[in-house]
Image (cartoon, rainbow, N blue to C red; front, side, top):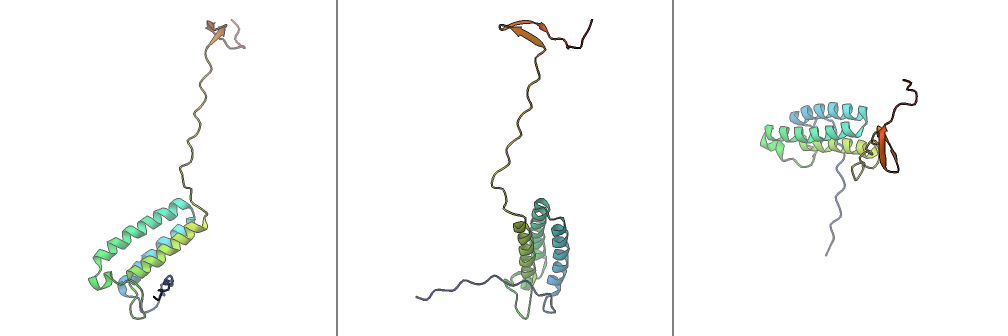
Length: 138
């Protein structure tokens, strides 16, 4: 039985004349989004851009003609919105991975502030009265 070799990851989308008009418009929007997010270069901005990219891809996908909805891989004849989406997603993911490993748990809560000092003194466990400031003079 012959084994099937793993498929290599797709190359970045070439920005050539074979890109359909829908993909070209989406690519312009994606380039703006990715550039803005990678310029900030912080985890929150990159994750927000990734969520916005996913949301916008599905909005585009339902609004383009059916022929443009189902192109899974770019070809020499047609590069469509999925290939543009995948390229933008990979650029955002590369920027996220370049920041370092993500935390696996939430950071611990800060320690609560210490309770205020009591306004009274105790002698052998017996409350004697309110404590006055040491600088207080009647």
